[in-house]
Image (tube, rainbow, N blue to C red):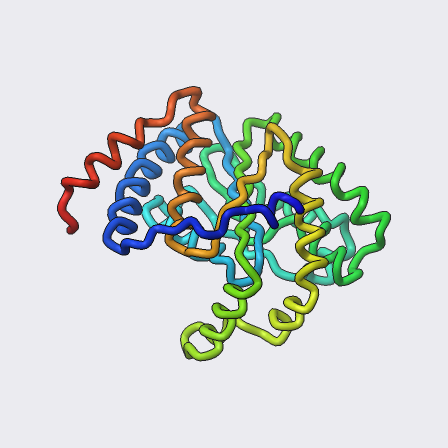
Length: 257
């Protein structure tokens, strides 16, 4: 069994009150360290991959909702246009690479080459097999140019995904999020799982490591993602992460607002 299949999906934050206190604390810490990153000689890429309905958008929202919108951009990646198809698959991503002091967030990414394009036969076996080295070289070039790359894969169970799909169909304001294509992709769950395992194994590099998030419970996933960004930002600054035990002790006495 691989690292996704072995992931503990039981982790959660049961108390809504505790969740909001944690969210407030970590968002504040994230805002403070992000200000220092954008005024330093850094570029930042936050990359989110994972199952449909795993909560990528929810994590992105909680990370960015306290940030200055002038310093980040969210790129929601969908199927390539005819013009983009006429170029190398990485071509369309270069225009979204951030400049100094900016954060580029990718909701889906160039990893589609070794996931959906592989599974749906949108590229040949030779093309997706060589993509692992191409992506590693691409990310290494970015890292060498002082780019902080933080990659997330949000994992949940097939049963939980089904539950969320059904909930979306019943909610008028969320119904747009679910399509026949999403249901069809569920029939290829095992193929996607195998491809994801191989993707993570072959592209987990020191300069661009994968952070696998247990997304079975949304509150836990969001806090985990924020904490990961905080840690990576402090690592880039060459400083120790603030003692979160102190933060937790403060939470015990701080009143909810």
